[in-house]
Image 1 (tube, rainbow, N blue to C red):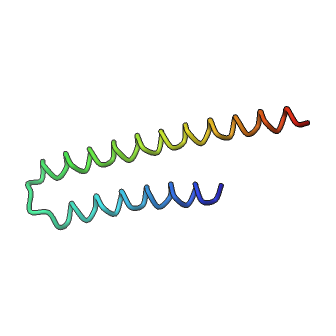
Image 2: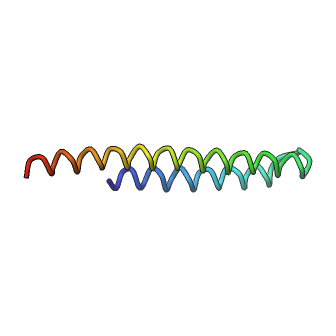
Amino acid sequence: MKSIERFLGGFVIGGILGSLLALLLTPASGSDVRRRVKDNILYVKSEVQIAAKERSEELKKELARLQQKA
């Protein structure tokens, strides 16, 4: 459980830091940078939602398995 939390935390922090670095270091125009940052945020958000849904399904299956044993 902690490894998933660490992964997701690192994923989110990495996405944020990557976006900030792109914003600071890119020679592109401001509107282009804003669009790319927005795209990155949407990508990270969707990946987190997918990972959370997958983990939720795993936990539901595990709970059902444990309830059958009891």
